[in-house]
Amino acid sequence: MRRYLTTSTASFDEVASAVWNDSVAAEQYTGATEKYQAAILDQYKMYVEMADRISARRGLTNTFFLTLNTLILTTAGVLWKDRPTVAVWHLSIPAVVLVLQCAAWFWLLRSYRQLNSGKYIIIGVLEQRLPASPYWRGEWKALGEGRDPSRYWPLTYLEKWIPVSFAGLYAVGFLIALIA
Image 1 (cartoon, one colour):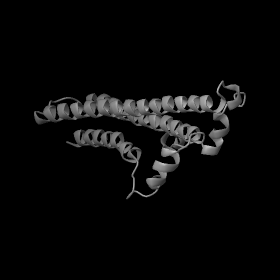
Image 2 (cartoon, one colour):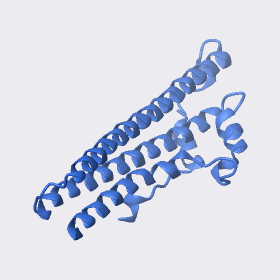
Image 3 (cartoon, rainbow, N blue to C red):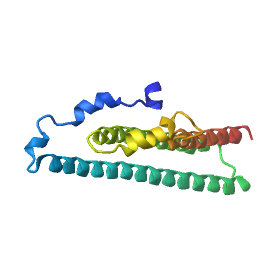
Image 4 (spheres, rainbow, N blue to C red):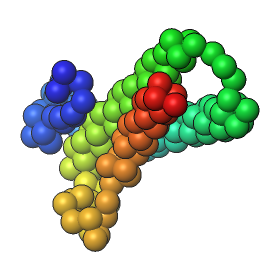
């Protein structure tokens, strides 16, 4: 179960050898080095755009689930005010569904985090062949490589707790309904 709750990322060195196509060299390009560098830059731009799109989809996923869960909690609050008389077991099915929905949200965020981790390693590898390394060596170094929360606290550390919090809220709400 632990491997479904934690993440790991390939190392930079592990990936670097797999990125470069050994059958293509700068000398094979007409205009050699300049065209080769331009091809690398174009691939770099495309890859950065792909990573940005993953981040945007991740944001939309969070927005969707936050809206859904806010609506559910608001509805539950309104219904609880006039407390309908239903058997407690009738509440067990929605409670299980809500906790499963939170688990799906958690694993979607985990998947997006893994996708972007891989993409950012590739971006770093591509930057090896460019004149500057703004992300891999520059920005990440400026942010303390995510090790010092006073410099940078990665959003993924915070956002993974949101679905867990909602699932906990639903479980506690169900227990309160059982007791009350």
